[in-house]
Image 1 (cartoon, helix red, strand yellow):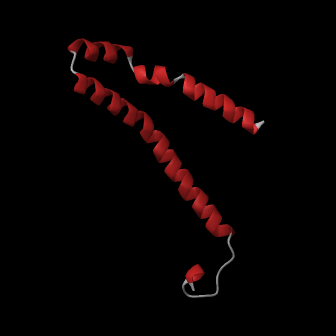
Image 2 (cartoon, one colour):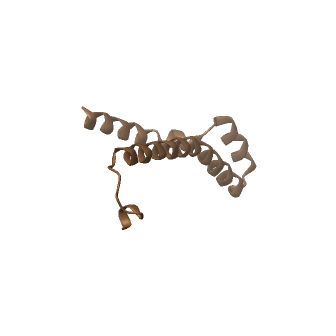
Image 3 (cartoon, helix red, strand yellow):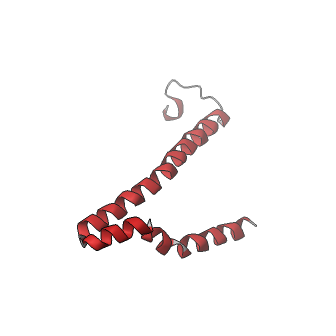
Length: 85
C-alpha cells in the first residue's frame, strides 16, 4: 500500500511540473509583456524559492526531532568521549 501511495504522489508531482512552472497567470502575463528575459527568470526563481522554503523548514524540524528521538533510544556510553573513545 505504501508503494502505491509513493507511486501516485510521484506521478502527480511529475504531471504538475508544467503547472508549477507557469506560476501566477497574472504575474506571468505582466512580466511576459515586458519582454525582459532576466526579469522573467528572476520572478520564476523567486516564486520557486518561496515555494521551497516551507518544505525546507518543516524538513529541518523533522530532522532535529528524528535525531533527538534516535539519541534517546541509544544506550549511554561509559567513556568520556562517547562513541569516539
